[in-house]
Image (cartoon, rainbow, N blue to C red):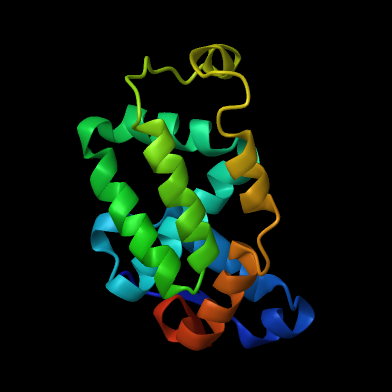
Amino acid sequence: MIKPAEIDRRQLEKDPHLLWKTFQKFLSKADTTEMDDVQMAAQLPYWYHADMQSGGHLQYFEEKYQKLGDKLDVLLLATLDALKIIRANRQAEILAAAADLYFSRPRRHTLDTDKLAQLSPAGEFQELDEEYRHCSPGIAELLEEYLTAHQDHFIKII
């Protein structure tokens, strides 16, 4: 388990968003290999959500492939499990469908966003990306609930 971040109670009283900001910082900076199961169950959906906000499923898979190569499937399975833990069941279904589509054919890989669109048939992931964007509740809301239920794993108020 990674040691929880600390927040001064007086600072939290001045800035009610500080808890969420600290949680996001914790998830974005923490080393996955040192996290406990509760922490990882938040971090994997957090990164999926962040990647979806910046580019959609194709970009999510390409970025992860560049980092993990053939171990992408391990991350994908862990992320699907984590989404279910935070109750993002619809998002897990969408990610599973996107993974089936992504792995349905051989891919040339790139992180160049200009070339990324050229490597994929027009609109290949558009429907799934749109479905994701319209999920309610969204992952951010579900992560807020998860933080409330498991705050002691992420943040200690001093």
